Structures are given as C-alpha cells and as structure tokens.
Length: 372
Image (cartoon, rainbow, N blue to C red):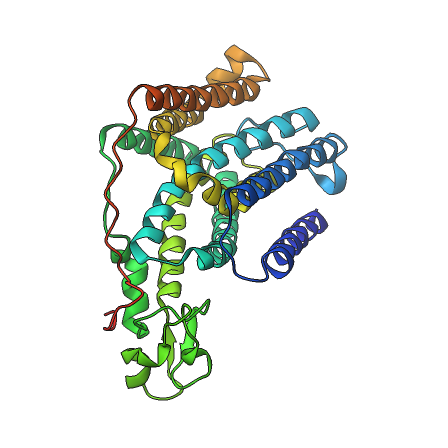
C-alpha cells in the first residue's frame, strides 16, 4: 500500500510543478475565466479519482480496504469507499469555501498586488498539505487506538457549529495572529514589496528590484539600514504566514469532520488534498462575489452540526438506516449546501447587501516605515 501513497504524493507534486512551473511561470493577474477553467479542472480531477477509489477498494489493490474502518467497523468495498471519499471531498470542499472569506480579508488588509496573489496561495497550499498530512496521520492513529476519541471529535464539531450559529462574524486584524507576531520577533520586515520575493538579503540584487513599475526599492529604509547580508522578510512573506496560520485553524475544524465519515487514512488524505488543490482557483473565481452567498456560513454550520451528530450516534444510524447510511449523509450534505446557495441567490435578488467598507491596508505599498 505504501506505493499508492508514494504514487499519489508524486502525482500531486507533478501537478503542482506543472501549475507553477509551466502554466503560471510568469506572474500575472488571474482572470475570472482562467480561474473558472482551473476550478473545473481541479474538481474534475477530484471526482475522477473516485473511479480509482472504487476499483482499488473493490479489488483490495495492495491491501486497500483490507482492514475494517474504525468508524463503522466494516470493510470498505468499492461502493462504500467511493461514497465515503465523495462525502469527505464535498465536506472539505464546502468548508474550504469559508476559508476564502478569510483569505480575501488578508489580501485586502495587506494590500498584496493581484499579480502576486497566486504565488502566495500556491505556497500556502504546499504548507497546508504538509500540515494536514501530519494531522491526519496522528488522528488516524489516535482513532485506531482510542475509539472513544470519536465522541470528543463529535462534541467539538457540534460546539463549533453552535458557535458559528450564535456568534457574529469576526473581523479581527489578521496581522495580529501568533504566527505573524512570532515571525516579526525573529526577522525584520521590509517596508515595501520586493517583487515576488518572500525573503531578501540586505545589499543583494533581489533587495534592489522594484516592487512595481516606477517604485524604487532603494528607498526602503529597512533594507538600507540593515547590515549587508542580513535576511529580511517581505510583506509577501507575512501574508503567507497569515494564510498558513488561518489554514491550521480551519484544519482543526475540517479534519475531525472527515473523521466522522471514515478513519481510513488514504481516503481522508486524498479527499482533503483534492479539496485543497482547487482552493486557489476557487478563490479567484469567487472572491469578487463571495459576499453574495450570505447564507453560506449558516449552511456550513448546519453541515458541521449534522456531521458531529452523526459521529456521536453512528452505531444507531447504522442500525436504523442500514449499511448505506453514509450515502444518505452525502445526500443531506449536498441538500443543505444547495439550499444555502439557493437562499443566498434569492436574498441577493430581493435585497442586495450594502458594500462593506474596505479594510485599511496593514502594509501600504508606499509605506516609508518599517513593520514592527
């Protein structure tokens, strides 16, 4: 089975290398049409992978599905594994959409030029895959050894859902996260964007490249006052740190949600990966109209409530609904999300929401001072 893990990781790395090294080798502003095309491509890959899941588990290739799933204590055949994979993919995809709200706020607050946003999200995805891989591996081992931990996960999801329902949306300063404060503590931060660089050395050629046409980086006081050769973070790097920190927070909610469906690490990991891979293109496709879906957060809260309750009473559901109860859960998740989107579109046509006031940039491109 180890070869399937290696092959899948190699496939993902090859796709990411093709993405950044060929199709997005030169920094450019992602158009809505391009974003929609890439979104369709990643969704197609995610859904197409379910075919491999079906035949792999149906024929138990290299031991796939040979052991009972700790969640429902049954062997995952082709049909059961496919339903669990698709349910996990839909749940992760829907929860990742909520992350787009935060990403949009971070980009607005840090004033990252649109031409460099794809690069930030690309490396953000790399970090997210590594973090989630570690969390999934640890979570799968815990569930295999301590089945009662599922009830803790379920209670946590129900608590998170209730919190989303009763607490108003927060607009806290994204630059005030612990990760950003830690980065600023150990590295000085340049006052300006230095092209697409995350790090520069004082006195190096990269530190003297213009951030935008006509902007002279030689005027950056942090670069000029730092000892030659000293490593400096750029505002682009701080933005990446913010995105990684927020993804870690979202992963704490979303990974237990998938463990409510299955504890098979291969299904959990692959469904997570394909859901995350399309997050960049989905951001560029939806960022401009994300506020139109005003009931999306409500529907996501209901989904978490459903998944948490399912985790708490999985045995009773299996007895009442039979072996196909995961298929019913998938249908309910799709129905809740569809209802939320439909209600948002109707509400948008009846009473368009007021435009939100733009956030003041945390890192103005023409700032004359250092960030502390």
